[in-house]
Length: 173
Image (tube, rainbow, N blue to C red):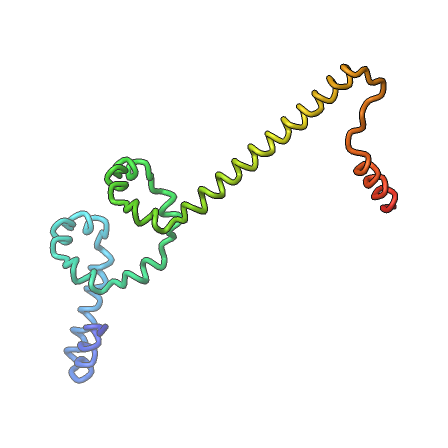
């Protein structure tokens, strides 16, 4: 920026009257600026008129929004957002009506899901039946023992299995 006084100073070097005028002007300006009350001057400014003269579009064209957005902390910004009013405005029924259920089903292997869930249910049911069968077998064994007046309890397993378990127990030290 060029100081307007520099032009006058250079001109004053050629003519002594201009040099004196330059010195007087500088002194008057210094006295005037010193005497001004900046707060009173600012109070006289009509900000609405001043803002009305500003071309916002011209300013926005010079602003690099990417630089500004790089300085924004999105996590902090989102932490300040109350999502409840936003979610209250969402029409869930309308949103779900736009879902293509047929395409969703095509991408899902429902056969595998059903097989896994039914296979698990079948295994659970089979375990329950086995457990009940073992209980019933023990119940029948006790009653047969009472009917035939057995003095000694029956072995828990056939003799061959009991011997095999004994052999395994002896083999593993």
